[in-house]
Length: 343
Ligand code: DOR
Ligand code: ZN
Image (cartoon, rainbow, N blue to C red; front, side, top):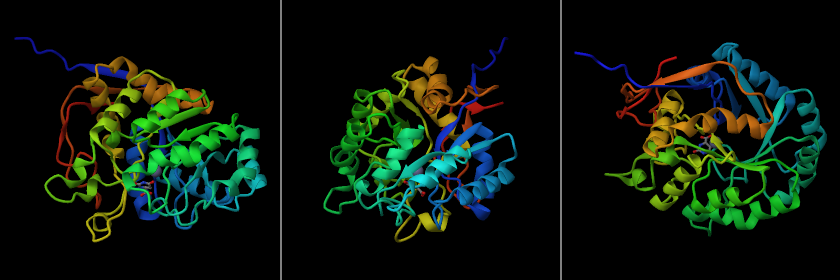
């Protein structure tokens, strides 16, 4: 009897265009998972205190490389505050420390208290970034408590994103972790300098997952998962073949006691099985041939960075995701995924 070898998919080494690697013991615990899957990653600056100077970013980069080994390249970002200095951004970019800068509306999410209170306050910084070709990464949610939490992304498009794109026509803008049909449409309709990252969780779950059988803090992240129609729109965008959409996990680990708490933190730790999670979606959508562009080509092309050398291989062999990794519950905990990263 012949047994067929499992199907394999080999793609150029991918990158993660949005990840939270944390610091200290958590950094050492989680960063190797990202480095196992990805060659490079855009590292979010929402530490305590936030990474606002080139010196702090350079030191953080060294701590990351100490945790991952030198085969992984962290791409550092500047946390934009109301007083973001155009000269400091330009200097850090010229020195090769900053790859991009992140706009968190103040109080939109974890450690965003020092974020931007009015986007007009950072117009001088954005003018400098536009001039030097430094991308702006946007957490696209309004913080107005009057706005329903499930509408905060769509309202952000009307109140802020449309104006940003109009006023900075030459600025590269990444609409991070899009979760709505409105955001997918906005990005698709915008010019080539507007792109978006898409997380595994927003491809797999809708808002029911947060409440399935009781409140489930491990399905809670920001932007929060939306209705099914939005999940389907995000899936369609990811597999569309459009170069505007690329992989960004938003892996955001919190220790179990910070999640399973009266006021649980937002964030899903998806780094350990990120490629396995994404590839399942492309398979289900009959779009395996478009996975490599999403994972390994669209991001570097948007950022103007070289493609990675080398490849990774996924095999159609089932893998069981553990209930816990250290003191963090991973995305897909206890589930069986159909593909495994084998090399
Ligand atoms: O769910 C989230 N967690 N969304 C964010 O925007 C931040 C992140 C974190 O740092 O925990
Ligand atoms: Zn994030």
